[in-house]
Image (cartoon, rainbow, N blue to C red; front, side, top):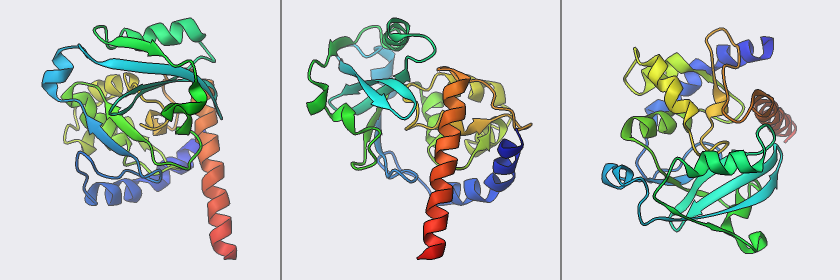
Length: 222
């Protein structure tokens, strides 16, 4: 908790700087230089009708991960550690009930393998309602190794009184890790919720904090 409070005390100027930098629909985002494309409201209303989603399992620093992709990019990342494979797959599939799902039988040749290797900038295909996409866009402006609060995310999207709705949108984030909902905490510094389990959220925050510290040390010795 104390570490979380320390991170929160540092976040304000960082978030402000990120917001001032601006962002377009195909802009580059945070330290991973992610590019993304959002589904249009009309496409979203069709519940992914006519869309083919490929999926497969890969190992990650946070346990076994389910990766889902369309021809436009990664549309889903979830984890099986807390709920198991079957529940994790069902949870993701019900978000897009009209899509066709295709399991990847040769994951070694599949673009989902690049999610956690930090070598190739991933491309996202963000599927959600307009308000959700605004919230997820704000999350992608929080730098790795830092955190923000639900209320600050609400303010960042111009809806300071919509903290509860923002929290719901954060909880519905389909692309864990790359859309970093794990970086959103309560004002008290408590972790709050995490759809795939709080142990994974703790591990993600510790992983990013360690990477930030290691990078800082290298810069000081350079």
